[in-house]
Length: 373
Image (cartoon, rainbow, N blue to C red; front, top):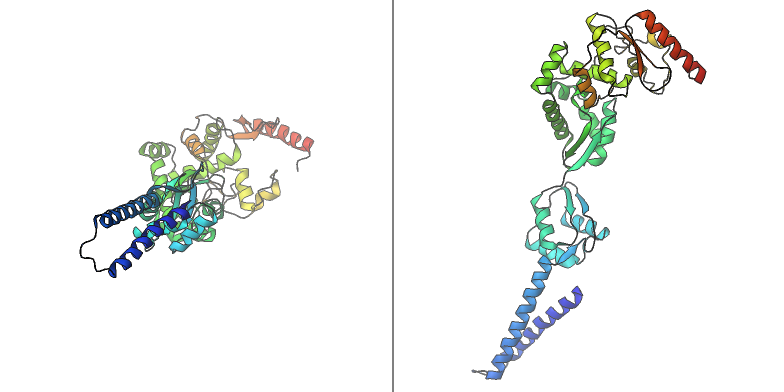
């Protein structure tokens, strides 16, 4: 259909050109009335055709025609117009490629292609599409990271949604100078990254992503929350470190404030935390289901059976719910807890060590019965 329109328009233009050549050879000082009428009609018809086709080139649907969903177009850094056009052609997004390229040239988009992630909406016309791409108004992408223990874990989850590579983000996350810039060290830096889903721009650099995470960290740590941490005798970093232990101990949000209360009681009494998840982290064997006495001998700052106080950094990224559970920890006298022998995921809590031993014995018997070693 479009090719026929172009042929018709070219026919008008050629006819006008031929007529002009013929008139050059005529020595007619005063054309007849019929000739003037014919010329006027021809010029009018050609003008209307040019205007109509020009309007169609600009405003007729030409991208994602008769599609129901928007197309995500990713334009990398340094891409040329031909790269964009090839991508649209390959994915059958653009209909009339010639008119798209013509409008792009008129709007000078071919001279300045901006990188980014753009949505080509259904039935979009050339003018709207080129205007969007030329403006650089990107559509944000969503990145989510939840369970993570190491910088590489964050990079693996974030990088596939971004223009940068996994190793580029890992390099920044393990750079001690970057950590110091935001007030952390190599162990505590991960506490700045709060697990959640965020909208970011595909073209953001690793440094820009880290800066955004710092903004989110500052936004979470309101004056009220900082005051709560201070009343517990903890800094925001220490709240996150303790939260990582609580999260590793229980997945039950309703139980997390009580577990946090146990560890806070132990800290206040200068008792070692003796948290099994910190041993698992120190060993690096996350498939370990049962911590034995031999595991407690590992030489690591994360071994809370040997070292007093909190470990130097988090053993995972505690969720926002876990951080809030620590800040709102239960006030009680419990000093011990052990998983229930019904394997419900909940725990039995104890004030005395003897009571705790009784609970632990029942749980160990249940493990033995199930053949868990």
